[in-house]
Length: 397
Image 1 (tube, rainbow, N blue to C red):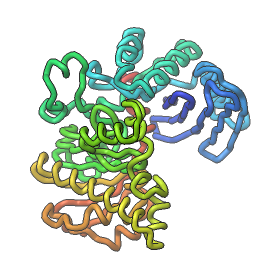
Image 2: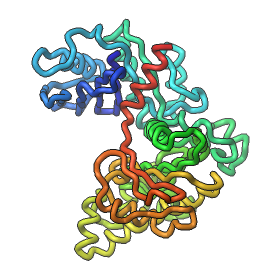
Image 3: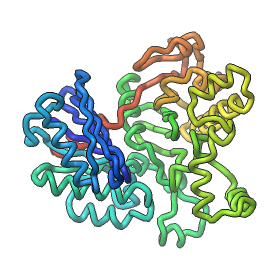
Image 4: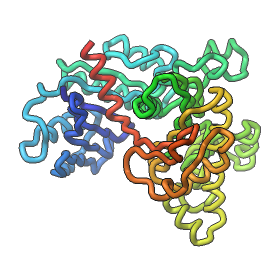
């Protein structure tokens, strides 16, 4: 079965067409500048046939029509008929407390997603608009919502609650939700195959421009670092991560900005970018640090230190750890960050091999000695394949 995976933003639409039976990527593409002038679609097939179409897309409906046309292109597409698409899997940011797994989309599901817009005001309207557009132009194709938060719905209440009045939580659903769920789910399934058992304790480090950790016990998430929004937790590319709420008000007052503006500041102007005052890109900072830039080095060290702290706390929660797994752009490619994070973890039974770390190949890699009690792995993530798998399982059943 061919599954179309959709990841819609307010002005963009990323997509992949995947044959789930052999887990093969057939093509991928992106529509940019939706609702703006100068829109364009770029698509690449598995054998590197490429098409670029410049066309304005006033809404996600026009974007979806353009996507279907591109996939059907006789020279640069991968379909001869839309009927070849067995289902569409939509990445949806927020499930609230209404869904604990992926769901087949119907009118009721859309109504519930609309109710939860306040929990994700930047992403949910675009997610919903794209779902509606897809249903209009692909009327007979079943569709599934795969939420970025549901993998974390297995957290116990003591882990997801904030210490605020319980009535406030009940009224406004203010709690830890966690994000990057499709990535954490995919990697947790892959590491379970590698370890050969479901009874393991794993800490997954998804490190990219956005980053989060998840503590996984026997395949279920018991804690995660992102919170009510993706702002909480690690030091990220442009996000501050954990910060004293009183400091936030202090910053707001001193800078003379509004509450909305200070949240935007913490999301877009802090993190590694803010510390280094140079870049949010780990590669740029590594090169600068190697050239003697102290602020770049500090940004990298703070990023790794925050990850190390979370690993220690999650090891306590799990009562030990069988594997620490790095994934995401930084996790998969930055030997420096991995080394800074894992150094000094002998107390957890980690016998880290720095030579393996420095010469880490693409793909799955073991970075500890064979007899290490706790293993350290790099496992590439594939969120789109995770969405396709979940979509397929729901449609098949």
